[in-house]
Length: 207
Image 1 (cartoon, rainbow, N blue to C red):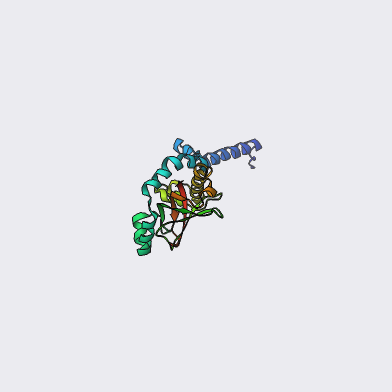
Image 2: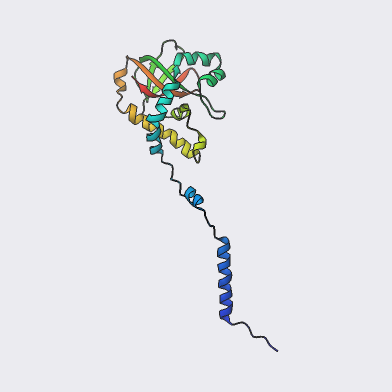
């Protein structure tokens, strides 16, 4: 006795049913919270700079600013103790300091305005005046911006660049650096310590 083979249409129907089951098993059902997290807005550096520089970063640096000669003396005596007392840092990186001072401006060159500060004969002090503004001093000296607030290192770096750009637009765009040559100036800003013999400050105020 022979057994009839099942009709082709039954085989096709069974295959479709199996496919539907497999699709159901592999389908990811997202909660509203998951969907919202996925749809999180992409980080906007320009908006971050505009929202934080003038309203938060500048006041934070002005409040924390220590007299530059006082700081350099403390660093010379004990760099680590000075960092713990006056500076800010994340992890084991170099300390960043908020500072203020006065001195006589020199001739601006290569994006830097040299300032001779009384009592700092052994320290070359310069203010970054652009057009290129380098470093992360404004971000790091603020004290409230941390890596954990960002998705990755790229966003964290972009935040620092955005603050530099905002400072350039708010402060440096109208600054006549050539006119300051030979004049007394006051400044507030931040720098990351590499050596006490060379201090390059990213300013938030120059007068």
